[in-house]
Image (cartoon, rainbow, N blue to C red; front, side):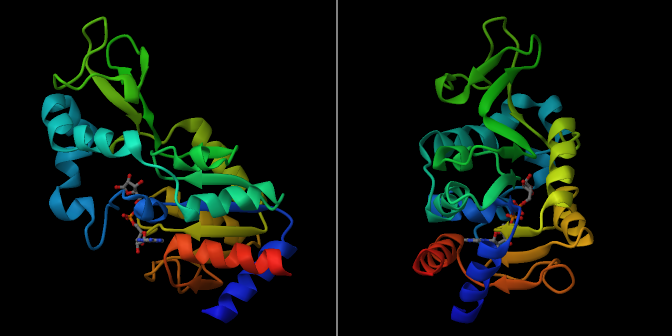
Length: 247
Ligand code: APR
């Protein structure tokens, strides 16, 4: 792994415009379960039952009780780990410009990244399904499920459920960022959910180098990634930053 850490430090230092694409894996070390793989949420729940818009519309209370309530409890107190902090440090060093994240946990912003594209929306806000009023999630009272707006409407996460469109602005800006970068860091995503997983493909088509950080191989590893650094995001990011600072 040492050689690849070295290589990544050199590639980052020499890049003109770096963009990161992140997924649930980068938040695992913050105590947030991923979706797929060992300990993943989809081992426990059928995503079509708890994360599809049709399931939510059919019975919002059920989806709140099964998944959203627990998610609120976890995310209300989660804090960034060394993986998030490493990406924030790369921005501070003037190397990384944009983070495209599939995560809805707000931890990149909490770590200090200033240009974060929330591809799947955000859990930081809940919005009323009737009047569209938005609420800070931490302030939403969940003693009754589903929680309601002052107007009586049901609240839903301001995030993208399966079966919903990617917010147009996020889609557009991500495609731009992917096509403009000369290096993309792909951290902690299984790269199986579209259209997010296409971003490294767009970057590659535009000539960018693709570096993956993940303890497992993904569908990108063989054909799209230049190399995979196999490991946990926090440890790998720490080692890359340390290497860059020592040069
Ligand atoms: N560091 C880095 N990567 C990790 C770590 C870690 N500590 N732990 C696990 N991983 C990797 C796993 O090997 C896996 O490839 O993170 C990835 C997590 O994959 P998913 O759970 O599928 O997460 P993600 O790719 O973000 O999922 C995409 O699917 O259902 C949804 O909408 C949800 O945005 C999500 C989308």
